[in-house]
Image 1: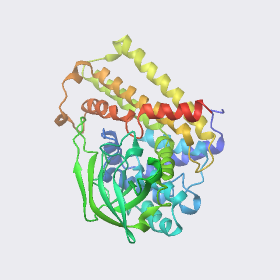
Image 2: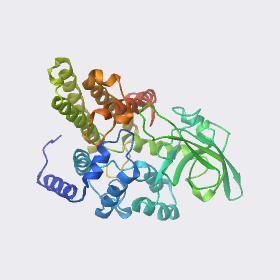
Image 3: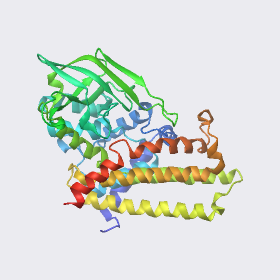
Image 4: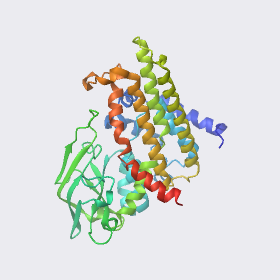
Length: 392
């Protein structure tokens, strides 16, 4: 690997930095910096996505004819890293990184023409209907039914842990269209309007104090069969393809460095208040270990990206990226509460303020516990790695 940027890559980095200097609103950076949930709220992510769309940089992994950039792996890495380190809001991924690639791969031309422009211009805000009360890591056991009725399906069931369903106007979901054969063979991939009669969104209180997730109840929800993506009972292929992008389609190291920087800034804030945690040799050693792990992860991410063609899904190796990224996220969050010391034992979410980073470290830690569960639990990722990478 050549770790030094050549002149063209340095010019591209300068172009990205100039764009960030001109278009990144400090208020959006503040919103992202104070986000401890999975994704920032739409009023934070939305304006930034519009700025990226206007520049033509919103969907780097899409084909150029649908708005993609045609960037190579190094350019993508530069862009994602510079955005993260500048504090830019995280782009809401449900449309641009999850259902978008599925539509490009499995959708009809009519579906592409209808949905893809709406993803690009922000006309649709998507949520993901995969997990259910009895079907999380064992996704194939889902029971939400889609019964054929002429040109329509009638949906009944519920979806669990549905992130930002309370903001979304569209859902992509896995539903059961057949109980014959293997469980995976009777699943279809559908999309539908969250305003359809029979859709109810119920909030779920989480330990970190953020409102991110919901349970969505579907009661006799009628949707056109034209809303199915791909053939009937072939939704499992769509789901596997989507999950590869969810687990490894992004670039994690830049966001992890941004999270680690927040911990470093909290250390400086504590020092300003008279507590210098850098006098704790064990804590300094732990900080160094996390930094070294992050450097190694970044090199692994670069090598994997460099082996992919533009727009290519990462395949089973996405499980390696997801596993390591989620554990790194937790390690950095644990470091944050170690920095707080006894202050972490007494946490009041009402203590959050615009001035201090310290009240963010405990909810960030609490929310991080879910990172090794959602998107496929770590045990599932280890099984995929064993079957698809090690055994191969």
